[in-house]
Image 1 (cartoon, helix red, strand yellow):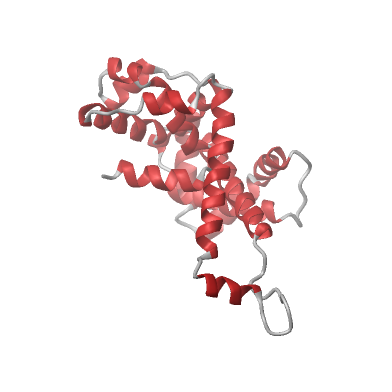
Image 2 (cartoon, rainbow, N blue to C red; image 1 turned 30 degrees about the horizontal axis):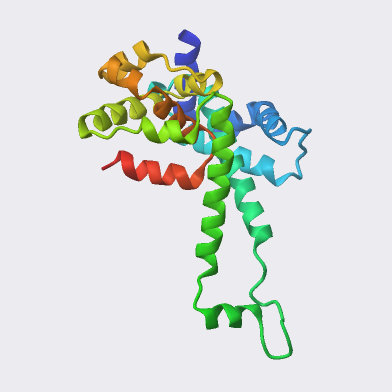
Length: 235
């Protein structure tokens, strides 16, 4: 506990002073490289764009960290992984997009045909990305013996149950160490979440698979689904 408090104080101090910020990032550069290497599944070097993304993510984690979210290092690890996942997905989408300047004949480009058909290529791209996220999410759910149908079935139908689940979600994603534990095990520490969020444990039990699914989305870089959930949580 004292080590976590000391680390929190160091993070708070570092973000108030640019020199301390640089020193802190340099000190934890081996950690940042290790997280990048684990994500890439190969050794990273200074030329990898992913390392730059990870360093920016670490810096953002410093700026946004609060001790109520748990220990800093697990929190920073989660931020780095989510940012790298988002970056890779965006790069993959960009590589799939055909240039609108592609020449079809002497006078006609692909962009001309898109305009003629009155279609928005960005909407198509967003749709493809959303579908890809859902398919990946479906596969991840299977590792915890959960189906999309079960997720839908356990979605709260009554406003009271929805409000309880919202409180439990807000509490859990605010505690990065707790969120990481749920994602790694697929199990909900119902007593801990119920007491922390001050909600009914029985309601959480009825919506256990739904909650596990929500926590997976918040921890694994599902950018489109996460945006939708953020809108839902602030209503």
